[in-house]
Structures are given as C-alpha cells and as structure tokens.
Amino acid sequence: MKRTLFVTAALVLMAGAHAANVSSPVETLTVQTGKNSLAFDNNFSNTLAGDTFADRFDFTLGGKASVRFVATSTAAGRNESLDLTGFGIYDALTNLAVAPGKLSFLNADGVFDKWTLSASNLAAGAYYFQVSGTMLAPGGSYAANGTLTVSPVPEPAMPAMLLGGLAVLAFAARRNAK
Image 1 (cartoon, rainbow, N blue to C red):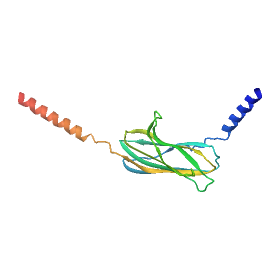
Image 2 (tube, rainbow, N blue to C red; image 1 turned 90 degrees about the horizontal axis):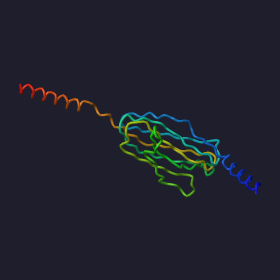
Image 3 (cartoon, rainbow, N blue to C red; image 1 turned 90 degrees about the vertical axis):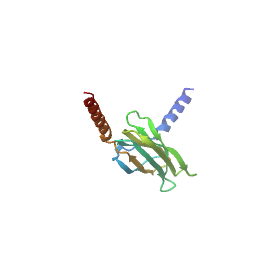
Image 4 (cartoon, rainbow, N blue to C red; image 1 turned 120 degrees about the vertical axis):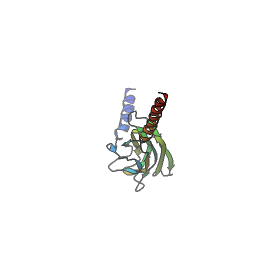
C-alpha cells in the first residue's frame, strides 16, 4: 500500500517536473493620441513540450480608446508548435480582464490558431496585453498586431467659455437690477 502511494506520488511530481515557465520579461508599449499600429511577438527556442508562457505587454492610455487586435500562433514545421490558450487586455491595477480575446480559428493539426479581440471605450489608465499558451513541441512562435485608437483629451475651452458667458450674464443682470 505504501509503495503504491509512493509510486503514484513520484509519477505525479515527475509529470510537472518537465513543464517550465518560459515567459518573456514584461515589455512596455508606447501609445500616443490617435491611431496606433502595434505589434508584438515571441519566438521560442530551447523549449520542451508542456512548457507554458504568459507574456505581458504594458501600455497606458491618456484618454478613451478603441482596440482591434489579432494574435496567431505559427509553426515553421510540424515538429514545432504551440497552443495559444489566452489573449486579452487586463487592468494593470486589478489584473481583471477588460477585453478577453476569442479563439476564432484552430486548424485540424493544431499547429495554427488565431485569437481576436476588440473593445471600445476603454477608459484612460494602465493596462496590459497578455498572451498565454502551452508548447506542444519544442519551438514555435506567435505574433499579435492591430490598432489602438486613442481619443484626444477634451480641451477645457468649452466649459470655460460657458462659465465665462454665465458670469457676464450675471454681471449684466446685477448691473440692471441696481
């Protein structure tokens, strides 16, 4: 009985021993007001089947924004492959998904998949893209690209003009009342 438990425990621990986290360091993307064409990718080498990754790409919005992105995994040959298991935009403060991606295509061999995401009216703040997956065989890569359109911050001229006009009207009304 003890031997069976020991062998079972050893097999369970050995199964996870081969899987490693092969995530890249966090990268920061520069986003400006207007239409931004952004692209990011990762090419994996010296990896093993079962290795996992969750790559993070930080960015900050100065105003409301809309986003349309596509992430695809590619394999140079049948011996290299990875499976994208997630793609989305997350709030940098809460780590909650604000725009999760959707798997839109997976070929029959499992060597190519495509994720899409779109969001509108993202508020100003700090966010990050996260691409996660599992290596099906040594090697493989993914690429993501798309547009992020940031609306300009409204100028304070309009409210200031309104307040100025109201002040002039109040002054004129007070002067007429005297």
